[in-house]
Image 1 (tube, rainbow, N blue to C red):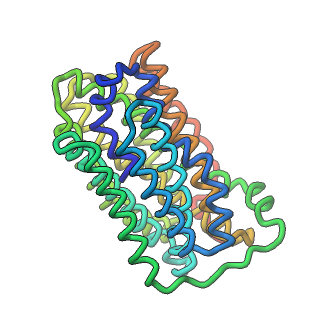
Image 2 (cartoon, rainbow, N blue to C red; image 1 turned 45 degrees about the vertical axis):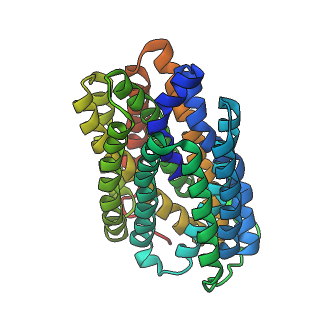
Length: 363
């Protein structure tokens, strides 16, 4: 939710602090930077204390970081608060996914993780709505409310029974990182984060130039998010039944077309339609990628919390570099260039996916 909340607010911060596209990208990407720094340490913490305590630790940092964002008085303070929110998300996300992965049978893992990711996307849907509300009623009040929600969630989770603890085998991290399928699952979390990071910077600024306000910008991302909420469990179920790589291949091929479309489009309505299409195509990598990581982590004897901590780091690389590089390339060469670069990365990934085993599963 917090990652998406700033999207309709970006034009406000750009105007208030006279930010360039690169600086706007850095502000958006600061969240990913925090997740990058906190990804592996967060996973190690979850592996040590268990998923429940990991979630509680992440929510505590989230509450403090949201208060800091509410009180920030300049772009540097805003960026540091976003960074802290990203650190908190890394721990909470690793713990939550590990909680689910150890609580369901592997035959239903893709669908279960797809459902969880759909709920995460619902948070992204709520995020722009929160951003639009913040633009109307005040940023400070909105982010104080988010801090209170984090506290209430922590109180509720404290009363829930903790899942069974995992016991990692010696050398599990090395075995997992030598596994091409495990690494491929990580890349399938980096690639869409790159793509979405670029899109999340350039699209709001394009709409703002066309005269659209924060509510209209948020509405486009809300619709896209609702579509992704519906689609992700379906993609997870297909990956359970037909193999992890089948939906990946389809999503990659479609993403190339969407990337080219975004590079060529300049009419706001066309761009809005492509943003919704992107929620299906770019978002189609996440669930199979997360399921691949869980499958291969189990095979390597790696605790799920640590596996998802590494996944957070992989996602964060894309979430950090996508807005920053996308904004810089757009500022230097125009908006089509970063979109075409993302399309080229999808094409290269598709070539690799076509060489893989269509029914990749836990051996």
